[in-house]
Amino acid sequence: MTIQAAIYKGDKTFAIESRTVSPPGPGEVQLDVAYCGVCGTDLHIYLGHMDARVGFERAIGHEMSGIIAAVGDGVDGLEAGQNVVVRPLAACGDCPACNAGHDHICHTLKFIGIDTDGAFQEKWNVPADTIHVLPEGVDLAHAALIEPLAVACHDIERGQVAEGEDVLVIGGGPIGLLVALVARHAGGNVIISEINEHRLAYAEQLGFNTLNPKSVDVSKAIHASTGGKGADVVFEVSGTQPGVDLMTAAAATRGRIVMVAIHATKPDIDMFQFFWRELELIGARVYRPEDYDTAMKLLAEGVVDCDSFITDIRPLPEIQQAFEMLTGNPQAIKSMIKVGETA
Image (cartoon, rainbow, N blue to C red; front, side):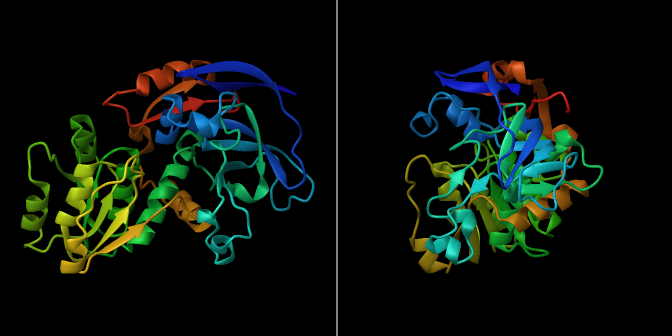
C-alpha cells in the first residue's frame, strides 16, 4: 500500500513523498493517523539540532491521534475502527530501570517518532502496547493534545501538588500552560512567570495570575503574595538560567522544585538554598501509562480549552509552512498537522 509521508531532509526542509507501508506485524497495530501536533522537540529537529540522532530520511511526529486500521497477530483487546492515541516509548524491558518498574526512563529508551519513524505519515505501524483507546466523544484534533498533557500529569504527580498549595510555573509555553492547568485542577494556587506578552495574555485568558520577570521581581512578588512563605511547588519549564535562578529564590522552606525543562547547557544552581531551606529537587521525564489515562480523563472533562490552545491546523502537504510559521512566532501555542483523510 502506498501512503504520503512528510520526510525530514535536513536544512529546515520537509519533503512529501510516497512510501510503501507493510501490514502490521505480530504484536503491532496499524493506524490511520488523524492529527499530529508539532512538539518543541520536532522544532529542534527542524532547526537541525538533532541531525546526528534523527538523520535525514525520517517521518517524525509523536503528539498524535488516529484510528486503528488493522491489528497484527497476537494483538488482543484492540480492533479496527477504535479511536486511539500512542504513548511513543519503546523500553528495553531488562535494564535496572525497567526491572524496577520505571520503564518510561529505561536506560536505552527509544522515543518513537524521534528515534524511529513517527506520525507525520498517513499510516503508521506501532507496538500494540503503546496504544490507549480514547473515551467516547473526544474530538480527534483535541486528542492530539493528550501526549503533552500526559507530560504535565506526570510533572504534577512528581511534584505531589496538593489542595491549597502555592504553585509557581516558570515558563508559559505549551508544556508550562498544561502544567499550570493540571496543577490548578489538583487544587494548587497557580502563578505563571513568563516574558512573552502573548503567552501572558493567553494565560490570563485562562484565568491564571501572571508575572513578567522583565518588569517585576518575581521572587519578591511570590513571597509577598504568600505572606513571606514562597511557593510550595515550583515547576522549572523555561529551560533558561534566569528560570533556574528563580526556582530556588521563590521556593518556600522545604519547597519542592520539579525540573521539567531540558537545558541545552548545564545551568548554575544555587545549591546553598537546598541546604538552607531544605529544598527538594525532583526530575520529571515523559510519562507512565497511568499518566496517559489521567490525561485522557482530564481532556474528556474539559480541563483544557482545546479550541483556544490549538493555534492552527494545516494539512500534511503544508507541513513546511507550518514549521516555518512556528519558528520565532511569539503568538503560537500549539500547531497541528491534519495528516489523513479520516481526520
